[in-house]
Image (tube, rainbow, N blue to C red):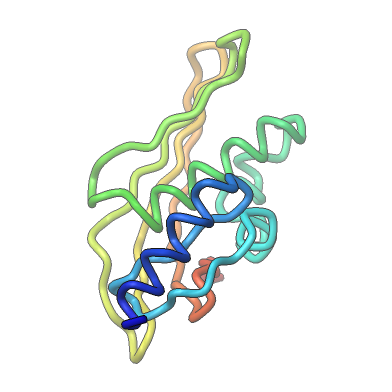
Length: 138
């Protein structure tokens, strides 16, 4: 079976399971990685700092998943939003255009949290690892 056909078969199988996510085929990475391991490798992202220090674990997880989606899948300047079931907290992650540093793709991004009408924002940069995870730069 040709490589492209294998990749598409793997992608279809992974998506149907729902427990996997795949990395961009344009990056040359085709191996699926579990969602939990990708999220864990983000080292808390922007939400792991002061911005998300008061968030409950469930909301912190939603916020970190939004950061990953913005970095991995979303075109530049398109917001990825999240919110709590009660609507009290919400957030928006916006990534800039990707750029290359050596062999890594990197993106600047911002994360804004709205809590009862008050907004807080953090900004940072993350670079993509060969396994599809993103590492925030310090």
